Length: 70
Image (tube, rainbow, N blue to C red; front, side, top):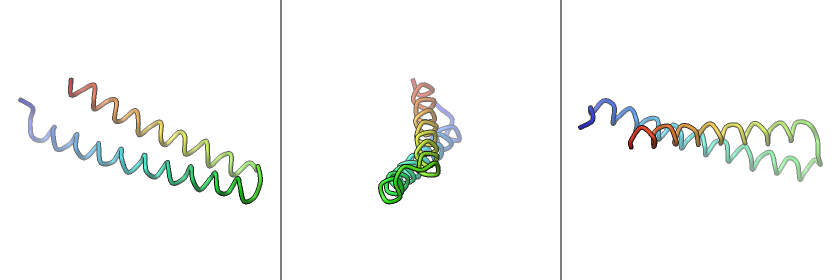
């Protein structure tokens, strides 16, 4: 049986991962909107790449916790 502290910690990390992923999705939408409104410029491309990196980090956190549960 797992320690209750570890279970609570994992739940907090999952919530954080969800928030980070949602933030990345919002940034991706904002970058795509900026790209559509202003045309292709460097800042829109950077926003989209940053959003992709943030979403990737959130996915890695989830995979880490899922592999720990097994």
